[in-house]
Image 1 (cartoon, rainbow, N blue to C red):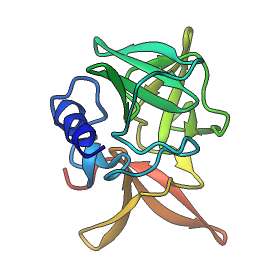
Image 2: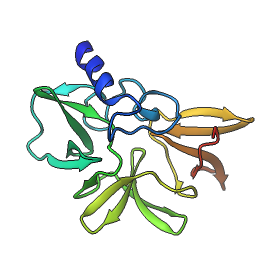
Image 3: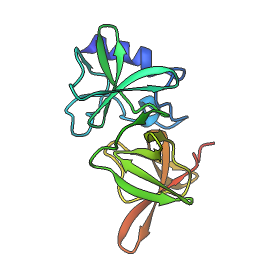
Length: 181
């Protein structure tokens, strides 16, 4: 497991890792997406874990010219003779969104949102995208970190920055540009 994790980090966790979720300066590994070896929601698999074979219902996808596989909200990339669990590859189009997704909107657009990932409907399915500023969500995934910039608290996850605020007695989060520049 340790060697698999090291190989995964070498192949998919660096800035030029072709299709990996880079996030541009967000805290944690892979731009803050799945900081460290967090468990993938609902799958019981740790980020960076490898499996010898893909689930039967996996769908092949391509992002930035790199092959990936998708099954039940989990993304896999070939690694030698096995497959590593990886962050959602930006730009990939999947046939359907996870069952846990909700519709969110803002900036004149609508997205599906699940576990920190934003999906935009396309003619061929749903594309994994970075949301524009102004999208409102009611919850953030476990692993979102608090970052204070110029005395303002933000939350960061998956390369996306959020500013929390109250709507009545409920805390909601709005996507904002990276406050660190």
